[in-house]
Amino acid sequence: MRILLLTHSFNGLTQRLFAELAADGHQLSVEFDIANAVAEEAVALFRPDVVVAPFLKRAVPESIWSRHLVLIVHPGIVGDRGPSALDWAIQRGAREWGVTVLQAEAEMDAGPVWATERFALREATKASLYRDEVTGAALAAVRAALARVPAWRAGAWAPTPLAEWLARAAPGTTGALHRSMTQRDRAIDWERDATAVVLARIRAADGFPGVADTLFEVPCHLFDAHAATAGELAEAVAATGRVAAPGAVLARRDGALLRVTRDGALWIGHVKRGDGEHRFKLPATLAFAAEAAGLPVLDAPLMHAGAEHDERPHGPDRRPPLARAADDLGWSELAYRESADGAVGFLAFDFYNGAMSTAQCERLVAAIDFARTRPTRVLVLEGGRDFWSNGIHLNTIEAAASPADESWGNINAIDDVCLALITLTDRLTVAALRGNAGAGGCFLALAADLVWARESVVLNPHYKNMGNLFGSEYWTYLLPRRVGADAGRRVMANRLPLRAREAEAVGLVDAAFGADRAGFDAELAQRAAVLATDPELAARIAEKARRRAEDEAAKPLAAYRAEELAAMRRNFYGFDPSYHVARYHFVLKSPHSWTPRHLARHRELGWRVPEPAGVGQ
Figure 1 (cartoon, rainbow, N blue to C red):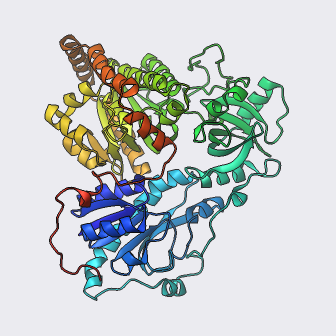
Figure 2: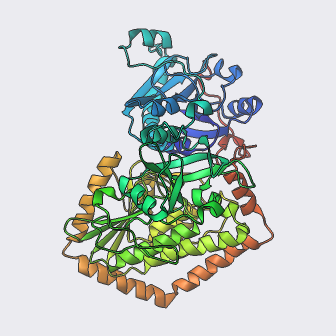
Figure 3: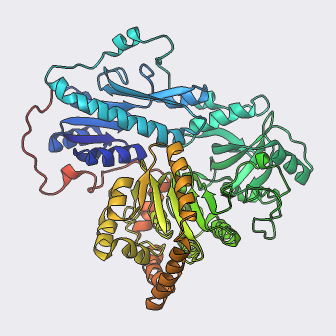
């Protein structure tokens, strides 16, 4: 079928649907929902068999749904209506949730039911659930709905009216109409609310809009919260000599602030200040740099196998962590562990939204240097739960006194991470992509010897969408080495998302497996163990070192880096402001004024389709 995706933006869900439905054989085009007239024009140009709306912030105009089949993807169980469906479910502690595909009608989220999928609601942020469970359920429900379209057109099947579905459903299995959640509903009372309540409220608002609150008596919005342990709170109290009063901020770690609750404490990773110049999400210690400067740093041990090691790098304000039990280590962005036999090391770097700032890259290089000292034969780089990496940190760059200088520092820092991996020649390295990767994050993965990805992962291995950046991360060395020069040029020219299976087919990924997170993790551990016990492992490592030396002799890595950075310098400091303009609008979440032409296929010059049978009703 010919399917028009009508969406507020090309977010993760829309990208997954676009890539998967195209792989199913459908013709896809995308239109951003900017105005009724624009959407009407898109429908007239593309003549879709079906309009699918995966992510909207307003109602589809009657001029479209009254003439065409429009399927709305709603992140809620059947009967649960309103724009804050998932927010309410998380904040109220629902144990199960779902996605429903409805036919658009006059009343929002009240049309007949075409398909629905349910899933267990884990304790996580709204953004994380949306990227994983919601996206997976939405794909399954949309596929089920599309499979019913031919029968519906033939009069052999009809969707179930919502009222009829609700009347038939078992008690407690359906939802209800909820009003839009307000900041009053999300408000935190630090004197009365337990840690679990505070966490639920921040998680329900994560991604957008955040929880309105104050820090250091300054209005702000809170995001990215993690429970702290009793040991961490005790350490902070001992370090400051202060009373653990609810609401007090006692310490910092990896960009986050430790804040006391009624019955414990939590780490607040990101905030959006309500005053000043930078009203967008930033690491909490950067947004409140002056206020946080005097707080003690509570380092977490990098290696979670025991407290006898002093694994973290120390500087003037970085002291060795106190010894703590393995179950009292708390949250940190970086964590290293080893398999029971000590043959495989696993290094996780869970950076918020996959963005890697200069400081985060420097900490990751230090962690890789530590892993280099361990007697393992295989090093698995796990990235984060939701993202592997999305490259340089555009928000911290936008907030810098000189965004050009910070861009330069950040790209050099992520290049240093790639260099640390490329030159790690005494063991095999694996990039394990549990979550999506984009831009420089894709090429950071290619710095490993092997790339394994979860089946649901979507890759965006290109830079052009961010102001036509040239890119670095040694991609001019890593990409042709993997796929060849011609295929490499095609990869860089493509501006559309790539499924893990497609990436495997072109050689960007060595293996795609794992239908869910648990399945991926289990097979990852098994594959890594097999790799570490391979009788040919020593020969493979020797061959790796030999090839690296041969490549270095032919053209040094420094030469690739210099050439890439010469082009990046023009992006950062040259006369063309495209990168700076694109970054500004990305960070500020500026409303779209048009749909990029690589997505809006129906707006390509010369686009024509034959008049299809059965258009409209």
